Length: 107
Image 1 (tube, helix red, strand yellow):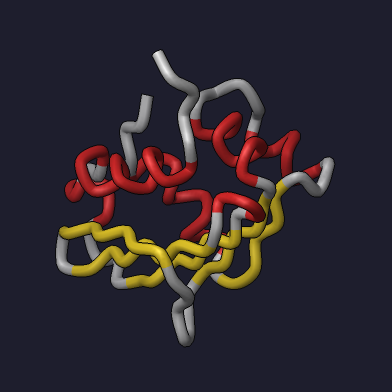
Image 2: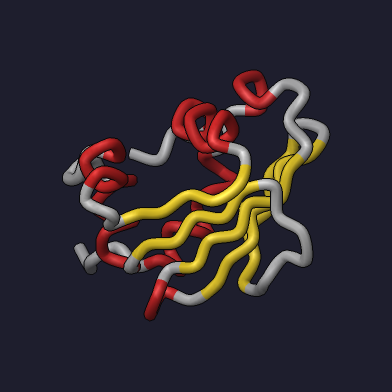
């Protein structure tokens, strides 16, 4: 099995989206993932899309190195530990950041 990349992870996000956990969420989330690139995840009306690019006015911005983010998603790195060690930084709606973990079934 080949190693997980940011591109593969982002391509899987819409399929891993749990719309029942995102009731009332209307947001663009900006991911700045170092060598993994910039990605925008849009959650709106029970749907989720992910595409490369930069959002004009995201509700939440997540900044991390690509491998650190992959490690968080795959459970190798605790999100709170990553935040405490500044391996991941959140800017904007922190409630959305906390809720996000339950909105996706990625592993």
